[in-house]
Length: 573
Ligand code: ADP
Image (cartoon, rainbow, N blue to C red; front, side):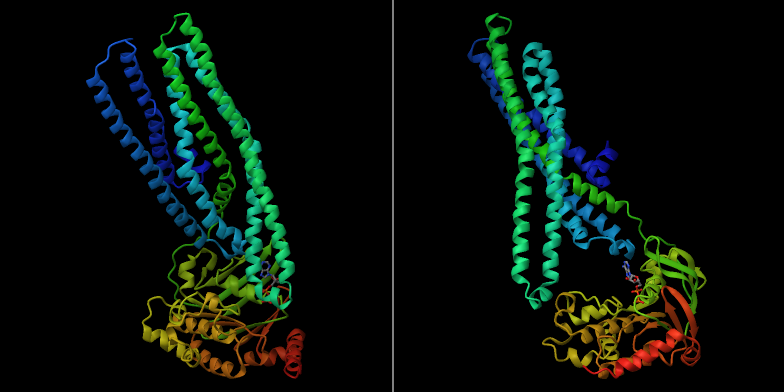
């Protein structure tokens, strides 16, 4: 049962257990609503002189039933809501744990708006269904079976009169599942599209304004919102019609009991007490069925969220064994990699990047240089061949072990919405303030940070939006200084720096990279002329490896790059 619930509703182990407990109390709650009816019948029996009656017993029953119901309703509320909120927290933690171990390849093929909606909105939808629908749904089914047996034992004809319409109404709800779930799925899909559209509008707000597209985009979004509204209404209609219809059918139960009951009463087969009892039971079950159809309707809206969460669970996470790396030579042997199956971006490359040496990767744009750094750092796992560090295949080393020894500075700097000091501290969370400030100085951050209103405590906005490209770049270099890892990967780090800053950074980088394994990509050919070796790449393959002088004589691609680099320096706008 627990396994079924876990898979069916994307629950954690605890969540499935919680749902079973909540359903148990929901069943008891449904059953307990029959107790006042029984008390009423006892009182009626006394009032109509149809059997024994003692006022003291009636008062005692009233108190006991009241206390019992109070206890059950309280437990039902507590178990349902308590378990639900615990479960949403557990589910979010579980998803975060999965997300943290997913390879970057997952992110490059996944829509990130959709992913964040899954973490926040899908969990919330399941949370709402857990607290408002699922326990009630199962509770009603179980209590209906128990009450039906009791009603049939009491009087078969009257029992069937109550049960048949209620059961038909429930079956109708089940039969209409396809209609209900189809419209709910369409609405869900459109809702996701709208989130994506609004996210894009926000991300592209600068471009929209600069190209004067605000009015066109506004019209587009209004059209979309109107369309979404229509889907919402049709999804509600897809629910309302079956729910109303099954409500009408369940109400037939009261009429049928009235008809059969009166007949039986006239024939003297039952007394008025029985008649009243079955009428009350029918009324109670009709209320329950109305709630049941609502619960069932809500369950249609959780199918798509469940699918998304289960898909995340089935993703292959980055695995690897603990390893104690001591030597930091990087050796690549016949390495292949593709982002998209069948389209090799790195094609059978073999290279060495040794400790204490600097290796530069050059080649035309799109030839695979950044990708090589990504697979060396295990941000992506290569498909074939092997990359070794300290003779260990990196795809088999635990990512956290590997990351400990690698500092990466990429062209696209990602900063957190926090202070400068906290952003630099990402390089080493255990560093003291003095160490952070020292790293900042080495990366030439001091001068611009001192001009900020609160110095190193200034908030830099979302992804450092309050800073210039060069300033953001320097913060990311400061992180690398602070981390002081043995392997340093630098990808076009000077792209956002002005000449003055580049000079300072070059000086600090020389200190940072001393005795380290350094792999660098830079389109400024001059900056890499003195490195120990240059790897020339073209179309995913390694064309040549050598020093600047060797390659100038040997490699046409390299010579061409040097020539165009000189030409670009002479370019005048
Ligand atoms: P370089 O650094 O030499 O400019 P890259 O390694 O960035 O080249 O890219 C190599 C090729 O891989 C390019 O054709 C690029 O379009 C493609 N590529 C890069 N990143 C991705 C990605 N995340 N998903 C799919 N293709 C990608």
